[in-house]
Image (tube, rainbow, N blue to C red):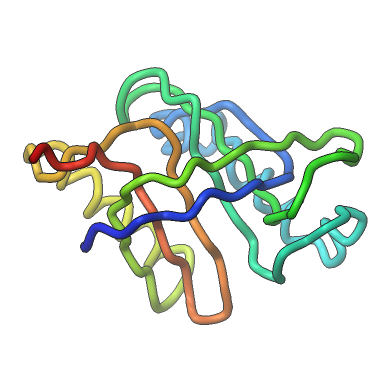
Length: 155
């Protein structure tokens, strides 16, 4: 895990409010349905101004830490969100210092394992500490890159 400067971006997609506890219970999990919608061919074809072909997951509106509720938006990066397709939201991902973790291998297992490493980092008091503001997953051909917002180091 290394700290990088995550650039600001705008993501348009579908949103759900959930928690890791809910996601561990198949009867309450909302993310599989969200990702199923996002995975349909052409799901974002009608979104204007796409920046690339990647899928993005934005984790934001944290209630507290990784035990609380948060909002996840799955969608595409856009230049502007002037016209939102019905049922979609736009979320600004601020440019901040972030821990970058690369998930490679069989998905979603490799991604889940990367998040587990991040949770362990948090629970062990790892530095830099997570900010629990806005986190980003970039899903591309080679795997997934996680950018988890951290507090900037004090000088």
